[in-house]
Image 1 (cartoon, rainbow, N blue to C red):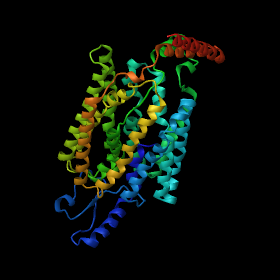
Image 2: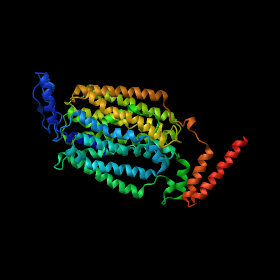
Image 3: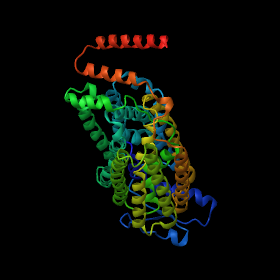
Image 4: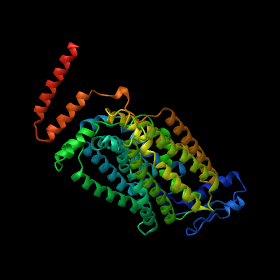
Length: 481
């Protein structure tokens, strides 16, 4: 529902009308600016005369009907981030008090309703109504990441953390790899761009039904589970998990590619809508494969004591940061509309390197202070959302006409951000539990015992009474000491 919007936007907007409007403005102050040449949609990769003479602007139009300027498009893209910023911090209070699965379910239901309503709002009320709807969607999204992190902490042992995170975060890549060709096909069909929103809403509804009948917040609440399984999970999973400190630079880079990559394919490589969907899809497949293989490999190396927790996250982060910077420089200096295949190969390499991020900074953030779940998740999400919010603003400043030179500058800046953030993490990052975050072992064992007793049918009031008695004994011992 979030990721498909980037490609759908290229289908919604009437690029020819926008170019004519921009031409009128240019003509007023520049007599050398000539008429626009509209490129044939099937001539993917054709540069046209703009690159030969510098006098014409080549326009690729997917048949959209909405005349939204770049500023208006960027405002709409920023909407979900504004909404998430509002609820990111308050979400930690609700998540701590209510069922994680139900909080997540309500957030997705809220997201689904607004997704389905978007075509009506766009065609009848304009861009600002869509922006408001995206802000409202973001209000629900502010609950999703903290809920996800807490569920991971409840269900996956520490030794499997990188693998679990790699699998758990595949949704972004599945949405891009599997969804982009579908979105492109719907845009090119008689159904039009409106169908992409309805399709996403149908998928979300199916997911919600499956989730409602199968998901549980904690192993202790599952009826269909053997006692051996439950005891293993209660003994080996962390009761709380965190996502701490700020992933500002990384979030900014990932957000830009999620939102603006289809625009790059359209504006610079001059791809038709079907080719755009294919090009948007393929790099995500490389990301998925790398993420899973790397995550399993890193966990195996940690299990074999070849790499420490800290060394593992630093190696993973270094591969992602420096590998990503290298590919971005290649994209900036060696790609134009005459060699779109080269761009695809480089992007596949870049997305492959990004697959190691999860085993790097993300695993690190979930390891530093496992005692604090929703609180640290919400704080970290708030910080990363600042990076997401800045992305459309920076893009609007640097991408005014969608020219090759503008995109070259964007890629160079992103490469430098990769290098800076990677170097800082390698110098100061850690994958180990911090001293200030450690909790008493007796308290952990007591909580595990309570969960097991409740799951086996012991009355909750008896468990509470036993806990008060245990705390009283601990307090008496402390006073004696």
